[in-house]
Structures are given as structure tokens and as C-alpha cells.
Amino acid sequence: MIPPRLIFRKGSLKILDQRLLPAKVSYLTVKDAAGVAKATKDMALRGAPLIGCAAAFGFALELRRRCPASAKELERTALSTAGLLKAARPTAVALFYAADRMLAAARAFAAANPGRLDTAAKARLLAALDREARLVTEEDEAACLAMGLHGARLLPRGTVIMTHCNAGALATMGIGTAVGVITAAHAQKKIRHAYSCETRPYMQGARLTIWELMREGVPAELITDNMAAHIIKTCGVNAIVVGADRIAANGDTANKIGTYGLAVIARHHKVPFYVAAPTPTIDTRAPDGDSIVIEERSTDEVVRINNVCLAPKGVKARHPAFDVTPAALITAIITEKGVIAPVTRANIRKNLA
Image (tube, rainbow, N blue to C red; front, side):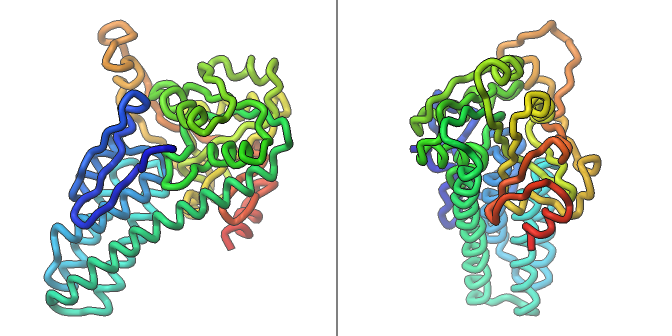
């Protein structure tokens, strides 16, 4: 079993520190939105859906800590809290979805309770925010199960599948998105073999995805990122499934750096390329991939592994954390509502409706 990723209690949130996996299972305890934002920035907390769930809990914690005395103060506090959480990482839209959803719940309470908030009103507010945060988590769990089943239907028996980065249970509060498809298909005895790309520079595939696949009993091997084309060509790979951090209205998809190259290789070898992501990942305000902000992270993550420097001192390095795969290279997008294929604006709108 995968350890709990988040443990929420009144006044605190325990976050599984994914920087230490698989060697050590350890938790950070945070008590406010700033703590959640820091854990997100520092990559102790990662995975688009999980970041969203944690943001919802972080919002509830912050309002409990600051306990606004009036509707106006509630409005100000809610706005600043949502802004703090959304600033943690710019690409994963699930973070924005959860923060905005909690903000809407707080604003609705303020509108229904104008003026000063007495003790009873404050208690109702905190209970309402705790419920909303738990609902965000429950919906993520249900979405993961649905995506797993929808995705498994696309795969034939004897599938040899490849995935990139970590879009498993560790990235969600459920069974995962892309890895959830693999484990659901494995439960149906459809998976002959799975390959996990290591996912430089942060090594999510090497540290997290292969660990999950092994724990679930999926026959799997780890490969370095630059082995992918050779393995696809020579080892009978007949499906690739990845997650997503943001999907534009036309289907262009931002995911961990290296995804775009994998999609290009898949097209050359006529291998179906699937994206598994819940509907909050679809950003209808982004018309296409060019409008998605790509996060640039520290060069230290490129030149160091476990604090050991691999490159010359003073070297310059780039670290775009994500790339954008054009919709034309994606065979289908798997959401909790079904399968979007072909990937077009119209079909995305139908799925969302």
C-alpha cells in the first residue's frame, strides 16, 4: 500500500515528504497556508491533483488560524490566502482550481453572514471550509478510480506500456491518473510489462513511479529518459500514458519536461499516446499551449543529485520544469467523465458539459 499523502486534522496537516522517498517515509506538519505553499515550492509536496487537495486544506487551516471577525475581514483574508497558495507553483491548474473553490466558499459565507461574525458563525465557517476541503479530496479519489476504468478499456490484453514522471497515487489522493490507468489495467490482467522513465532532473520516475508499480505487483522496469526511443522500437511498447499539469482549451497539454519528446517518438512509431487527467486540469481560459506559463526551477536540481554536484562549478543550466505537447500528438485524453478522442476543442467542451 502507498502511505497516506495527506493527513488532515483540525489545526494541522501532515504532508508526506516525497523528497525522501523511497528511502524514508516521513511527514512534515504544517499549520497554515504558508506551510503548504512552502512544501509545494520545495517539492516535498508534488503532483498536480495532490497539490490542489493540499491547497484546499491549507486554505481551511489559514482561516482557522486567523479567524476573521467580520465578513469584510473574511473577504480580505480569503483573497490573500488564495493568492499565497496560487503563487506556490504557476503551471499546475489543479492548485488554482482548489484555491478558487475555497475562496468561493468563503465568499459565499461572507455574503450570507454580513457584518460581524460571532462565535457560532465562526464555528459554522470553519466547519464549512473543512467540509469543502474534504470534498475536494473525495472528488479526486473518485475521479482517479473512474479514470483508471476508462483508461483500462483502451488497452488490449498483453499491453506493454510506458509512462513518464509520476502520475500515480503519490500525485493524488486516489489511485493516481496515468499510473492509475496502469494499475487498473493490471488488475484486469491486461498489462504484460510497464516501463517507467526516470524523469530527469527530479527523478520522479526513478524514485516514485517504479516504487509504486513494484508495490502494486506490476511487472515493470526503470529506464533512463534517453532509452525511451530504443525501448519503444525494440520492446513492443504499444501504449504510452502520462499525466498532465494543465490542459489548454484546444487540448495542448503541459506535463513534466520530456513528455513532448516522448509524444514525438510515439507518433513516429505509431504508438497511441494517452493523457490521463481530471477535468479540473483543463483550463478553458487558456486557448492553447502558448498561453500556459512554464515554470523555471532552480538549476541546482539539474546539476546536483542528493547534493552531489555532477557538473563543473559555476556551470549555467536551464530547468524548464514542464513542456507542452500539441493536441495533434495526443491520441486521447482520459478524464473521470470519459475519453476525449479525437482531441479537439469541441470534444473537450462536450466532455466538460
